[in-house]
Image (cartoon, rainbow, N blue to C red; front, side, top):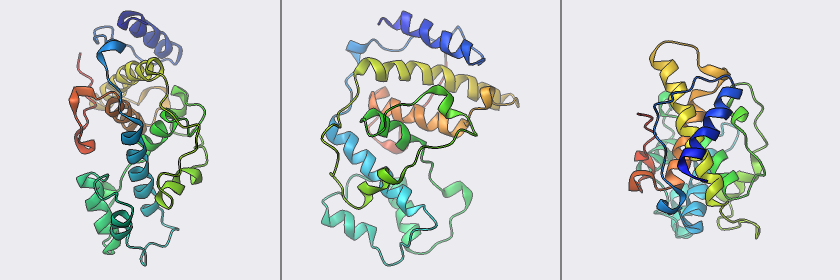
Length: 221
């Protein structure tokens, strides 16, 4: 699919969802210009996000579990970003977390689909009141890293690039509404939109950024 056709397809999807379209937004890169992350990079990122999700579950006892020591035993000390490591250290030291310091978990949903751990995602899944699929299966990677099912492999580049284009335009609409004091269109969850956008940009090596904490989700024209 050409970048121009992909743009038109995304705009049609947004129109069907009743979401404002900015026709001035540029086309994204062609498939041949993008090198996706490796399976190993994706697995490590899923393990890191699963670990952070586990530590952010109020019902899960973590006081007697040294996650940093666990990571070292598994030779996984380098998979956490700086912000994730800081969060982990605060949790294990018993520090109280205010709302602004809690991690978001939407990226894990998108990356799980990208690696075929879940079967299907749709733009309407980004709505605020949409029920989330059970996520217990994703938490297993915080206990048994590298235990990925044999069927796991990265989805086709075309599918990921389709989402890259759609999320770029979708995120612009959400951001435009927020900046102008308007209701978020389509009853979308603005934070989840941003997290899915970050996940796909990381997968596609947008702006050649390797630091998870600094992956851009810019939406300028």
